[in-house]
Length: 114
Image (cartoon, rainbow, N blue to C red):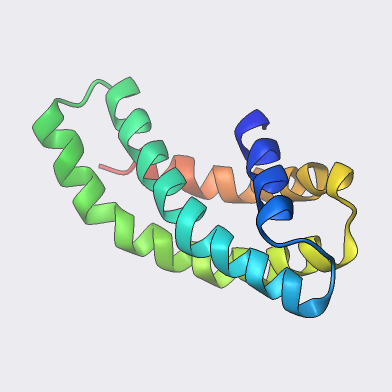
């Protein structure tokens, strides 16, 4: 939560406004910068917490990362454009967390596949 909330504040400083163009620009920054880094970090931490060795974890990340990132791009761009366009900054995190319940279930399933 705090990381994403902070990220939204950064996005609002980088791209001020709530026009459609601004919402689209924020979504592009979010999906090009934050999403790939967050996803890689999540998979690495999940693997480490599952007791995988460094080599096993790296192999699992290489196997799962692309598929998870593509799935991310099916879900999050539309959510984020709507979020950045319609939702005031102080409520964006709550909107994202509602969608993240399903997303995190998917990531947990992905991270725990053998």
